[in-house]
Length: 204
Image (cartoon, rainbow, N blue to C red; front, side, top):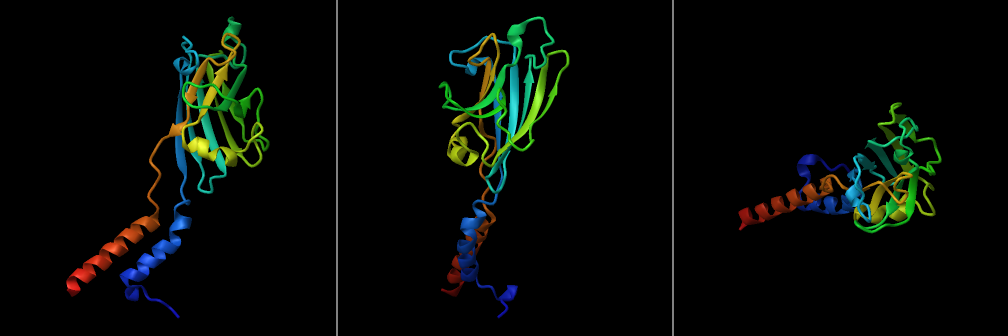
């Protein structure tokens, strides 16, 4: 039996919204950002280096794509100072101000298993950019699925390691860039309930 749009009662719409809620509430991407500086290290590091990152968790929440830009550190060994060479770049697990273990590596090592890592380094040794994606079984003894709660709670961070600061020269906590979108079903539910309440008031 067909249900025509002009015959859809407000309470029908409310029930439909409730039925769709579990699916719609997960059907969104989430953006994250990180700003990498020396003073976020534990203990803090005085450095001219800096960095930024943007990340996106897809709608299925099974792939975390990332783009990282680093300034003032040498990826190619071009500068005369070996202390500014990038030895490693990782995502770690840990609260702000607290060091923690590596969960996903981009450099030293690279934990990507399916060729997502791409790099563009300044030949003068002044910085570089990297893009990658964390998905599937990738990770350092963990997976993205196992770290989703830590990601959502700001418990993951980028760290860039150099010979001058082997425990990390710059660090940046990964935080949500925007509020979680309100699912379409929530809007539909609210509209339907308001319509139902208005109809009841008119009938009194």
